Length: 359
Image (tube, rainbow, N blue to C red; front, side):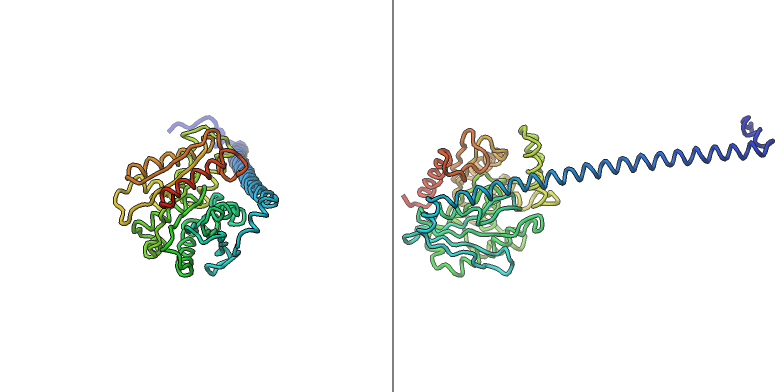
């Protein structure tokens, strides 16, 4: 075997051998140190980026929450709203279960009710409450409906299916205490995340599913006569689909991701977190699906979910009244001083008159 000159020199000269080992050791240490430093810098950069993203998401979420809470409070303080609320009998913060979030308000109309509305608030499954959605209770009560406006446990502390479990419990409470249930028409109503929840509850009332809460809903036999699913996030899984189909801002994309992963952390399809997918795939129903009203604005990133809902219902032969309002944003119907918001309320009340045979 031929040895290199360095090796031959080191073999003849012990000092050369020592220097060579020292150089090799320093080179090895330098290489190792560079690798560790590179990994440290890379990990530090990732930690900083993750921290910045976390801060941005928290600020974005708080901005949305503060906007709707402020809007709700300001609207409630107007003289007209105070007069309207004072004209109704409202039972507040009634417990329907054992947990702090298990509360509801009951809005009683001035005259004997012509129907019952179970209203489920939106807020991306993770913010807002029945208190921010007082206008919904007021709006339906003024039209002659008794309204149950429910709170439920919120994500991310309480992900899927906590909210649906709470709805099942709330429906059981209402059935046990409202003697008119079963005699008067029943409406499930909600917007955004609430539209998802009332749609999923409706499906569970019309078909047996394996999940325990769904079994409870089916066994209750409380099936709505009509559903109002406004600007709904009707498929929670596969949140990147919104960006694939439509150019949306980074702020909106982060909110949609935040909503989806808070409620459905494993992002798995095929559950009642995705009532839209179930409607698109299931053909056999043990009880007939009720008529649906849906509304959405053309500037709402959830527009496609409402369009798909309308197609799925029509394919199943279910009556669907779907309204799209040009230029309107998400949950625009809550801004009741605006012309198209008032038109949306008029449209959904007309739908209820037809669907419930109240004309």
